[in-house]
Image 1 (cartoon, helix red, strand yellow):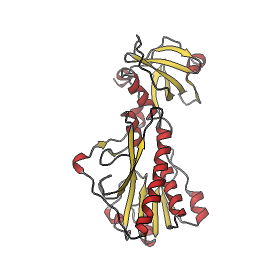
Image 2 (cartoon, helix red, strand yellow):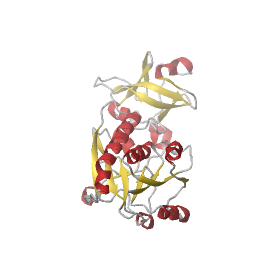
Image 3 (cartoon, one colour):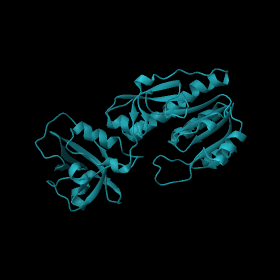
Image 4 (tube, one colour):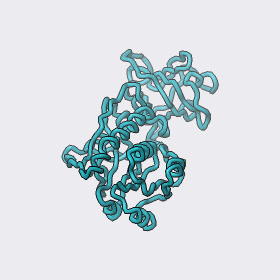
Length: 314
């Protein structure tokens, strides 16, 4: 089948690789110009060059030049994966068979933005990658299929994203042959069960140490690489927290945000009636370091306290 693919991330690249392996006629790939503020952007040039597929850079597939190039490819299937921008109906109407997308949430739950981060921040123990027909409304089209994904307590944004990429490969292997055979699988979503997850921005990563340790841990792991990271302030240092250990149920008599002790590379910080062990962090724009080095290399001591998020916002 003739395919046009729109993406800028690793999930899209994985799907392209599977389509290529299944013999799809990939007529064109559309991606965004390189931008530092796109956390999960990947380079598609090698894939396109190796297979002789035209690669087009655009900020919007809705503009006239992009829409014209897509139409010139005469696609049977149009894939838009990891694009985070709505596609207009006049573009969705171009493919002969279907316009398809993927969203790492168990639709209809979790429509909207930042589903990987929200799944972890909310402390969910399972999610899904949804494969669906695109409509102008975000994430609302009929489902092609879903791949369930278990979320382990040790998972963070990076490891959960790896699971999402693997799920994308499986969905392409499962459903692309059905499209080739003339089937168009679709199942309407239950709009009454739909929920909406809002957009996240880097400044949303400020840690609230007054939350229980489990919630602080989920906050940290949901915003680590490839995202901008959770952060806090201590002694005028902005500290980005990249990793922490899953907390136990042991209570602690402490002030939220207080640096309780250092043990090797870890640093224990007080939360609500407990503590969180930080393992990796970054001070300012410096290099990522073991968390314990915060009290060795900077003017920070055990007993100092990370700022209360509410004080920083006021």
